[in-house]
Length: 338
Image 1 (cartoon, rainbow, N blue to C red):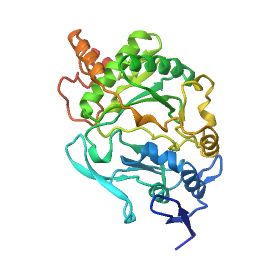
Image 2 (image 1 turned 120 degrees about the vertical axis):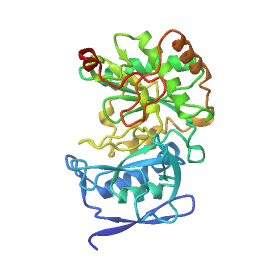
Image 3 (image 1 turned 90 degrees about the vertical axis):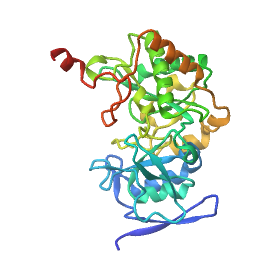
Image 4 (image 1 turned 90 degrees about the horizontal axis):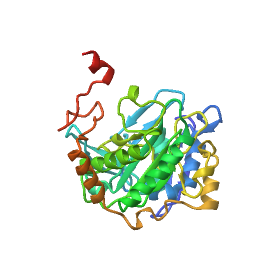
């Protein structure tokens, strides 16, 4: 059977016993962080982790041989899920439907660690209404030649834009070089509408910061700018959840931060070793995120305005079926040659 231990994980129904095999397996070799260390991290941040990622379909990014080895995504719940771990059936862009895991308590996340999950990718919608996002998300992704410091002013300007549209923005580090800006929204619109709202906000950001921000889908056209990734708003497109580790050598964590501390933040300091103490002493900046969700109606009005001005649909991810109004899926340099 090999090495294994039992962890007692507190939860709403009392402690759960979760078996953890190979607890001494090293997941992050540079730091010596083990599978047990990761499980204990998840338990330490458990309340905030479940508040941010719970009640949502979640994809699991699994690393059986540690972050330096091969990985794969589990969308269907892995075999052997405990009876208390819930799943929900969701529909993908292909129109096929499959179950995905739902994290209702910390023990489910610890069991996912037992299955070698390192990165958790929650949907922007709840399990009870998976077709209707309750989060608007914008991934501010620094391109080559730019870094985290370039994403900071873009995030601040995006916050102002969302406020003008009646939305309250929340912020977290990506766990790498970028920033993720979220806004809680009423679950009243399907994914395509939310995508259009994100595009409207991203285009407005690009208009206000044309030398710093781009919405160009094709990398060859982005230049040394911050890419406002609108395609993360699509169905079945997810980003690392709040308090999720990332599979990078220094064991970083995608960490919620306040707008007030943004100028002093060094995302490299947020790791599986440091975030539990930060959460204990500073609290969770996202604790009240969904207290007052907003509406995307103003952003959709901006989308319609831009359509009238000749700014149409933008490219979809390559695994998507051809979508109505979508421009040709060919990179600009190749199109020019043709």
